[in-house]
Image (cartoon, rainbow, N blue to C red; front, top):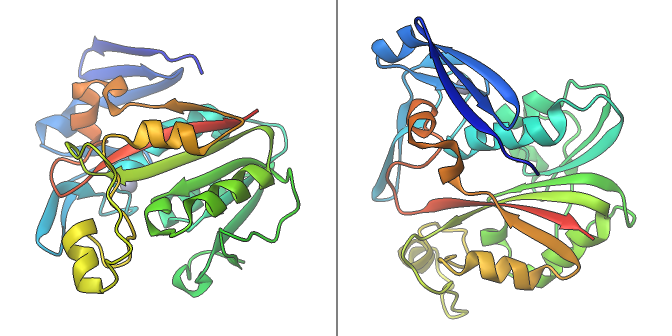
Length: 264
Ligand SMILES: [Zn+2]
């Protein structure tokens, strides 16, 4: 994937070229101390979210509900498939509303949203009930698999990975987002941690089963045999763009890692 990032100033405007996507932003928005959401293309004052003892400032777009990771992923999705005109297929795990709405109306995409609890996604038409460790789809079914913040909920990482590689077509791409603890050298997982209280204490969320650390990139590379793993760093976008669109978590317990995993 060839990367390109350029920034130019014109009167009252900032022009970005990111990964070949042109984006012209109005300076007025920044003067009014607003942020820009690329997902719904509006200037807004983003809201703080709070959970357990943590908070994240400028996290959520009040209009479309996008979080930092969704705004970051918007650019990856644009480059990889939102501008494609040919027919292809996407498997979307736990389909987030703002991303679902970006994809669902494109006629050339065979779009399959899934979750173990489809009733948790009332905005999705035909969300299919699937266990990601035992998918019902035939081998080589999808061009893309979207997995955002799923792996930290899955007890059996190997089963999850095996299934994704099975249903991806050769040359198909898994776009993977994982929360991790910055500064934690090794991913932490202890089978004795079973209560919700302990999981919040050690993993920061009641339904997480491990805490990914700085070794996550190495771990993902080892876990995905017969695939090419590329980490997409948040630094790529530059400080200016990260601040204007809040593409990176400003506070809270965890950070985000992003990977493109291409099946060979
Ligand atoms: Zn938005």
